[in-house]
Image 1 (tube, rainbow, N blue to C red):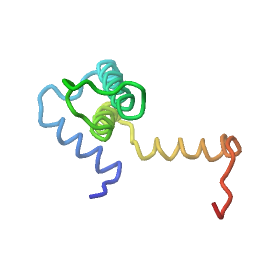
Image 2 (image 1 turned 90 degrees about the horizontal axis):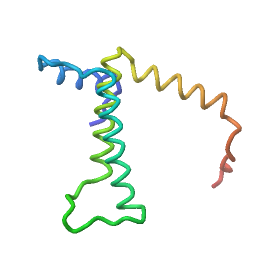
Image 3 (image 1 turned 30 degrees about the vertical axis):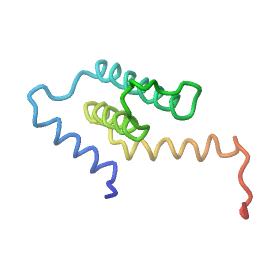
Length: 110
């Protein structure tokens, strides 16, 4: 099922909202996001880098780790009342203007 960013933010907010503790502080979530990014980096290194997994290591996937990063990032955005769809629109506008000639475009028939 495809969900919009707004739907994902609401789903995360509904989940967190059922607990008295609520969202962690932005600084705590930044630390958690850093931790999750490290786990994602480790998985990418295992599958696409020079460091294969040990036989004793738990099997995880890049997709699972990306999901963890997305969840924490969504929590951070929600706690700061940031609409991720609006943030996405702003960054795409920036890339489509400031960086429009930065890289070599593919030919149409490629």
